[in-house]
Amino acid sequence: MKTLAVIGLQFGDEGKGKIVDYIARYFDIVARYQGGANAGHTVKIGDSIYKFHLIPSGILNHKISVLGNGMVIDPLELQDEINMLKGFNPKKYLKISERAHVVMPYHKELDRNIEELKGSEKVGTTGMGIGPAYEDKYARIGIRIIDLLDKDLLKKKIEIALRIRGRYLNSQYDPVKLAEEYHKLGLNFKKNIIDTSDYINRSLKSGKTILFEGAQGTHLDVDFGMYPYVTSSNTSAAGILTGIGTKPCHVRKIIGVMKAYTTRVGEGPFPTELRNDIGNKILTKGNEYGTTTGRPRRVGWLDLVLVKYAIDLSGVSEIAISKIDILSGMDEVKVAHAYKINGKTTKNLPVKIEDLQKAEPVYKTFKGWEYPTNGKKNIPDEMMKYLNFIEKYTETRISIISLGAKREDTVLLKRI
Ligand code: IMP
Ligand code: MG
Image (cartoon, rainbow, N blue to C red; front, side, top):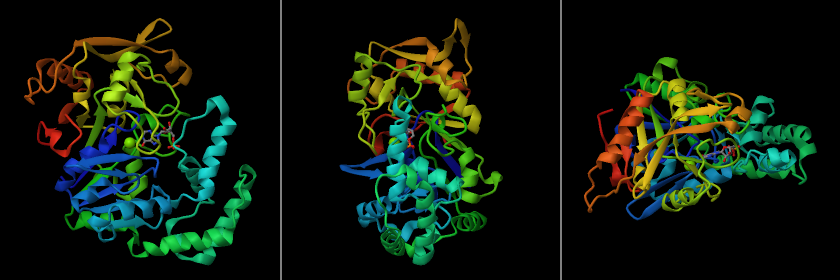
């Protein structure tokens, strides 16, 4: 297999980082293609914890790590992450697309100001400036990574962006100072800035293998997610082509990562949400707090209507399921397999947010299980029934399951 993509099937935080950390050993290169420092992956190795926002977690396996052109990169965050990874010699492994867009300080202020203007209709963004950075890209007033290397050009571009965005900003930004600061940051990783599309295509030609690492989840996709409660990039497999710059035939095998239940941060519909003791129990046990913002995540039962939609959209051929251990010790475990909307039962995901908000989940109930059982790490029968139901409903096999936070708790069920 020359390439493999890992994408999220829910609202992000499915455990993609951990799965990538687990399978990166089989690949030469790990590449991200969308999003920015809104993403958050936590990887635990032994007693060490690494929090990633921009750099693919594959770098922990000493793999070439690519930040693709479809990303929006905050150079301050990038610098922090490079510092965190000092022991792993990140500058040796990092390749940054010259075409990727830069998140500037005014994007972060715009992110906050726009949310405030939306009032009760706010999205609940991570505040990392993601939306406004992508807006500037499409408005053709964005700053690209390559611009950081030319101070005068950078100043000119910042002036234009501020002229247009200024009316939504309260703070004063000095283009000269900003250009100086960001030029300096750019020079710090000048040697890592390349044409990543060309690099990837040449690598594939020479027989190298590549893992495409998605950020966020399918239901946050700007085209296919629960718009407007989405992020500003294509989080589904569709994002790989534009965010990496490779041939469609190079995106063939896709692993979809799902959590054994559902979580979501920020606003937006969530049919299976549990606003009760069960939800709180899962929140605490699963340590469901955002890696980027620290916000408690909203928690609910597994929703297979959402998962199936995501699988069919991207052509997912294998499922990796995470955090199933967290559901152990419950009296019963439920899974939504349809919705009731205005008295009608449907397995289709409605496009209208108002319909989704009305959707009542139709559940199948499973008996709870204990894991580990008497200290033994065999999969209990009831858990197996749960997994079998997921496979049958989604018509997709589960090839990886993660039964705990550590690298050693991830199990390859079938050969991918
Ligand atoms: P933004 O990407 O910061 O603009 O936020 C848009 C929506 O996506 C909000 O609901 C965020 O909470 C959500 N979001 C963005 N990144 C992630 C992520 O990595 N995991 C989970 N939710 C995310
Ligand atoms: Mg996350």
